[in-house]
Amino acid sequence: MQNPISSDQLTGLLRRSIDTLFLENPVGTSLGILLGLVMDGVFSASAAVFQGWIARAREALHWWTWVAFGILGFNLRPFLRRHKLDPALLEALDFIKQQERDKTVPKWQIRAMYQNLFTKVLERLVLEPDLEERLRSSREIARSGSNPPPDA
Figure 1 (cartoon, rainbow, N blue to C red):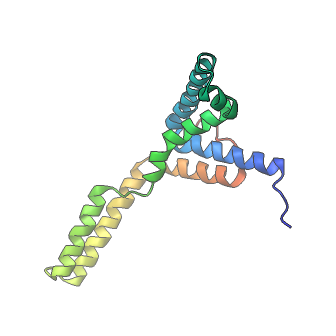
Figure 2: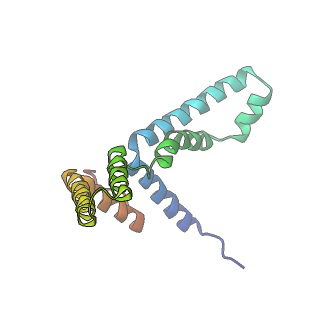
């Protein structure tokens, strides 16, 4: 038999998930919480007016359910787009592959083009001053479940 998850483990998992959501998309997560609370208020107010299905839906859906719907709504698009590459990078890769297919450029030059592109991508990453700090703090949060540093 499998052991059920303890409440401490569940709380830790929930805390790490919330920390990650706020680290990756703080504006979307905050707006999602606000939208969820507004939706809960609207359904609460309309439940008093309508005695039918809205009142039953209000009884079935708690405030945290609306907050979860709001957070999901504001974080779904960034989640689906998280692995998209820069169009300029894709265009450069397509150009190099086209040159390689057409055999208009020698292999050593193709290799140099790939190395040059790789260098430019690395330079752009190094130029982003807080990228390394954001990656380090997100890894620490994922590992430990702690809150982000106060200055983040």
